[in-house]
Image (cartoon, rainbow, N blue to C red; front, side):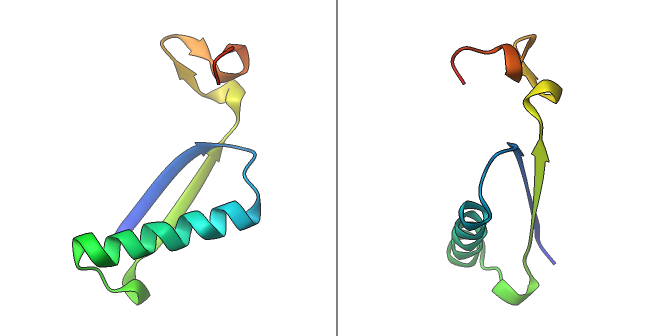
Length: 64
């Protein structure tokens, strides 16, 4: 039972997440010899105020 966990900022649409899950599943089938019916994709959405890079919160970044 392979599990792929994706950590992303909040704000993607349900359709974007559908496409992402499909692409991840296709890639795992092709490159990791997984069966699609046994693969789990978990999306963790994190608010920008709870994610920092290089000591700067996402809500404070000007390049994001």
